Amino acid sequence: MRVIVVGGGVVGTMHAWQAVQRGHEVVQIEREAEARGASLRNFGQIWVSGRAGGEELDTALRARELWERIGAEVPGLGFRANGSLTPVRTDREYAVAEAALARPDAAARGYKLVTAEEARQINPALRGAFEAALWCERDAAVEPRTAQLHLREALRATGRYTFLPGREVREVTGPGAVRDDHGDVHRGDAVVLATGAWLSGLVRELVPDLPVRRVRLQMMQTAPLGERLTTSVADADSFRYYPAYKSPALDALNAGQDQAPVAAAHKMQLLMVQRQDGGLTIGDTHEYEHPFAFDTLEDPYEHLTGVVEGFLGRPLPRIQRRWAGVYAQCTDTTRVVHRQQVADGVWLVTGPGGRGMTCSPAIAETTANELGW
View 1 (cartoon, rainbow, N blue to C red):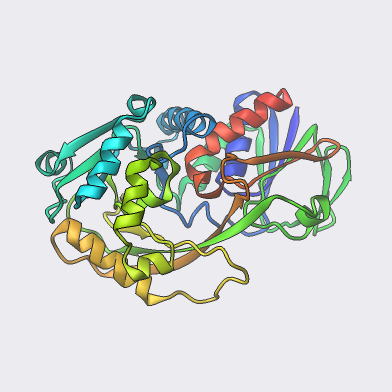
View 2 (cartoon, rainbow, N blue to C red; view 1 turned 90 degrees about the vertical axis):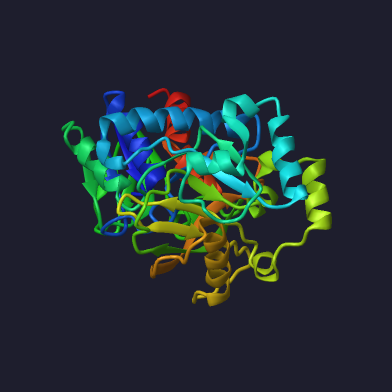
């Protein structure tokens, strides 16, 4: 079988991986020289802890298993089972963490409520003030800026993979066939459009009423911390954002403990992961209303800096990079992904939202199974 994958981000690359692993030939087409969207502009977190139960959690857990397996084959991914800690400082925050332990799927997530002293034993870099922390043992991380590069290197080594950058697919020309802006037609037994947040052009022509929206976020990265941050770190505002924490305790938190004004205005939470070079990736904000701003704002960065310094008990290293990114999210946020046959032999796979990095291996596996690869 010959599979054409359109899109060089992590969702597209994982579809290419699934096809090659199953013995097929793959041509992957990317409109940029390299993928430059949300697949690079993220935390690199394999984030199980906050996922909704049912299909979303099952997908995240399966993806976590696949990431670890692929990481063993492709060491350059930088896969590490680092887990995560969410420090809590108030009684209301503690109650939400405690309620999470009562979930029937708490053991599958690896939840444990630990004291501040136990949290510092897990992650000695957390020297700041907090009362306890929610530990999630199943969370993990990879290196988002280089993951696709290393995956493609491994794919090329099979002899059944071709990467074609700098080509925008413009038209479906027939069953399992697309034409790019160089005028070349690429034919296969299946075409997967994994175009991420690029929802105009061909995608709009094929699906004018696509139930997917775009979301913009701001992030930053520091110089090396100078010590290991042994886990990913979140703050209690993440309880307000992730569906796993829905409970009467969360209702009480929302009613009785306001977010900081900047955090509320920009729909913020703290997520933080250390990169292999020692720097910290820190974010994020959420912007849903179009048209998006074209600039980045300083207030969210100042807020995040204060939160991080409070947990670390020390000044943050110098900020080296700031950026904004855009990802695609199903308008029905309970859906893991939008997967649709849009033409004869052509499927569109988009809209995983902030779950794209986490869930992409399992999303691609499901596509491969459903298409009978």
